[in-house]
Amino acid sequence: MAGLKLLVVSTPMGPLGQGLGGGVELTLEAVLESLHRRGHALSLVVASGSQLPGTPLQQSWLEPGVPQPSWQHQPRQAPIEIPADGLLPRFWQRALAEQQQFDAVLNLGYDWLPLWLTPQFQTPLCHLVSMGSVGEAMDQVIAATAQQFPAQLAFHTASQAADFHLSASPTLLANGFDFSRYSFNPDPQPCLGWVGRIAPEKGLEDAAQVAAAKQWPLRVWGLKENAAYAAAVEASVPAGTIEWRGFLPTEQLQRELGQCAVMLNTPKWNEAFGNVVVEAMACGVPVVAYRRGGPAELIEDGLTGFVAPPDQPEALLQQLPAALALDRLAIRRQAERRFGLEAFGARLEAWINQAVATA
Image (cartoon, rainbow, N blue to C red; front, side, top):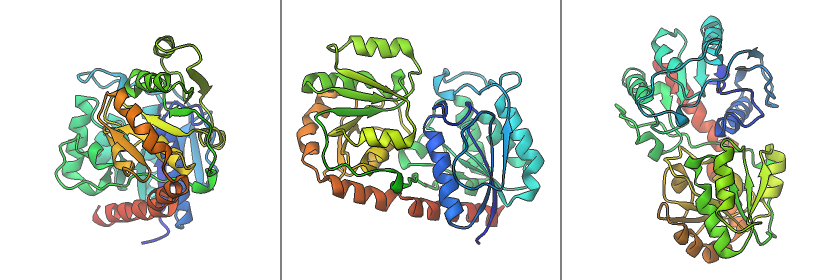
């Protein structure tokens, strides 16, 4: 089944282009571009003030409203929260109103409301779940949706899907990247890299310890979501260890990231995928990461990087010499085979076709 008309609903955490949506922003770009290349007609619901992706769109609805708080920063027993005049209900009012002109609706936000609304849609509503288990209310609605509409749920990795009580084997899509946007760099500088939101669950302090022990600078890219945490990490290592580079668009990030000899990935929680791991590989940069969550599934030990026991910075440090010896061109080629847009688009299309066929 080709040539579907698809409505994609963005993350309601704020306008695209500011880093508020985290890795979902990059996923959105990959979803749109990979499906466009496969001949599907795409429309988008997104927050006002967004920098729209370059993929051609049939229609786009830019909705005003208050950003939705992230489940990631709520207690596990937190109640469902929707701000007054929130983006979340505006997005789904729009999707409900426009659904009849589409073959399927694709939700990229990790939120209770769209999952709960799934039975109310006449058009198949598909959910690409972007995080692991972070709250009991989300766990329950994901399990209920999986029970009633198993073909309309998909996950990035097996470790992410294992967080939930699912009634059938999960659909796993990984993620996709336009490798033409990433320049291969065969000549790294003596520095380490780290990319992500600057928040405690990302474990930046462990990467800082590794850099301090190696006596190399640690270049850090990402939104300072928690300024007090960032200051505490910087104070925990010798002055000059951390070089703050800020949140950058992909084109600039990849140029700077490619200069790193190794990228460190230090999650303190079950990361669903780990976009930055593949972005580093796309530049030829080996990755040394904790054996936790999605990143551990992305790294092929001894080929594209190495994994180490969680929460042990000294174990990361011990892997650096072997990582520095890896073939950077082989890293890029292997990553493109697994995570290029063509492979991702084929997986996406197969999932959406199955959801439409069984609805």
